[in-house]
Length: 358
Image (cartoon, rainbow, N blue to C red):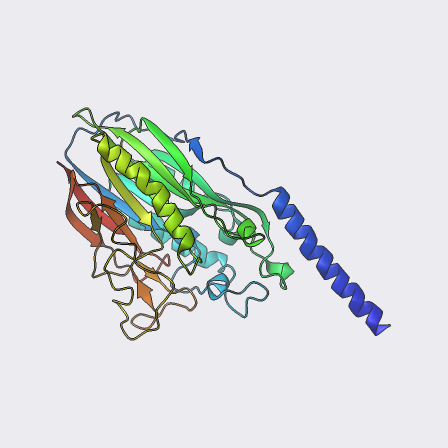
């Protein structure tokens, strides 16, 4: 009798796993390589008239990865959470989102590049963060690129009563100026099935803005792959984007790239902030990726990302630098500043720059 009960339980579990995988495969988001994105709100300013601009990039961690959070998947956990957080209490998410909105409201940025912005997700209690930020930044053009749309994520598999569930998230750009065109680029490189069913469909948003000199400012909002320890997928993605950046510069246009690269700038020590700590997965971008006159812009004094395998403890938790900007040679950075928020609201910290158009 006991054997029959155990066999029945095993079969039910297998049916659950197979059913979830079939459901996720059927509903798997399959974006095209290039898609034109229309703004959800528009700016009345049709051309950039001034020569200096302020930009900010920030991975806001969907309001779920503030200082109080660890994250089970960062530790490679798929079957059990092992006591690590799957999603924080709703009060913590609200605290994080309120802090994110307050921080953004205090920034004078002309263009904001945000990553991991939820539209409707179980992990963030279905609060529309994109809409809230759009309402906050009245008068800005707002555009959104989907990069995570899962009908149901069954991890941790052996805790079906509190799985990750439904997720709709992406990258968002907010600008004081109206773009002439925005394109979503689906980045190459995929993880093997079934892992890819529950990971981000990494993308970039490319925005075109008219300048008074007749040229265009091309701004890219990026969020490259994580979890590929050998860096193979990241390299595919940067090689794919590099061709587009160089082509725009060759036309005489100006190019700004900002976001969460999930890589360290060339020559910057990945262990700079914790020299005695074990090395983490993030590696340096190949110094040969871009011509020498392109500039990697970052604040070397402020970490932009923390290890989410543990709750954040200042001067103890591993931190690194993977959020920064790349400028074409016809642009100059006047100032760069990492905003040290002690990771209160996200596992990433904002980076602000002021640039001049030569």
